[in-house]
Image (cartoon, rainbow, N blue to C red; front, side, top):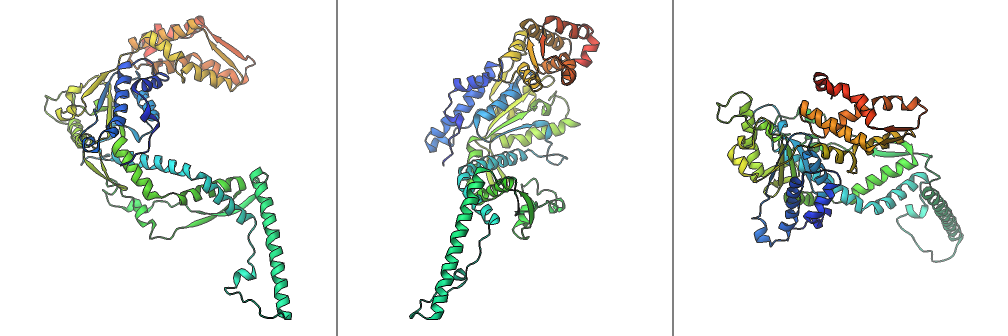
Length: 478
């Protein structure tokens, strides 16, 4: 069993945490937990095969209020892992028999992502060959080859004696050779012009496969979607492939033809085999909003929506503990897929989950609420910090935006206070405050002659103090 090495496979837990620190402030316990889990994926693949199948992943529950970094950690982990990764909300699912999606669609979606990921890698490997083939096809369109008499004749008879007819035949061959040489020279000139880009604005007609609208899938019986079966795929080999002629510029035609040639060069059977292996060995599912399917009081009589909640948990259980799911690419075993769940658990608690599901998430990490100091760091330290984003946005208008340190401290304090007075939404409060603070600047900049703005503590207080002081108003605005 071979799995292509991913970029994260060689990263140590410390290196993974360092990468997460570039975008997520604080929450060291959560970072350590996911870093160890990610490294354990690589460790398991190094174990002898007879023991490898016995090592199951330690699934994780991240517990904490909204806006403290649970989702951001998952997003950055997906980029680091370079493995099939799916983030999905548990609240999207309902118990089998109710209207809604069933939990097995998680694995089908994860498999679709894996196939797309592997296909893009295989396509990248054949781009050089595809570019050459596309170039030859485009040159054939720009300069069609003239059929020669010699090429049309299936037999060539060498004359025995030189006669008048033989002289005519030799002259014809010489003429055809001259035409062939002229055609080759013209083709070489066109090739040079194509590489130089001088033909980019010229238009050419190409035949491309027509988009097949999956109208027949609407007529399919209920249940085929759950089995991962697409009726348009079933009938694609039966119904003739339609194509349409498009008139496009040479530059676009070259890209379209290269995509088509690249698709011909890859072996989809190998792509699917590799994708299924990656899903089963390295797949990661981030299951958000798990608390929304937990019954608030398991001791009460089950009724109303709790029936569906309990049903979702029971349906999740076999997927998490290990089962086989049917997809349109084949059977997928979920025994070694890593599940990272997250939820605020304000009303319900992890202990409100059914005991069997609790046991499948042995690692629980509590994320802390953000403090004023954390807000200051969030505004300035990450590579995607909000202040850096707004500075870059206004730079597109030729405007320089500068925040003084006391202004940043004031913004962080306002966010912390607003979270205390109203619902705690964590770092998302900073988006609201900065949008309100910079609203007039963002609106007036295109017509303004002012090319530099400096935000200090006084500006922040003038804009926000009245709103924060009025608790009722702050609840609606901040």
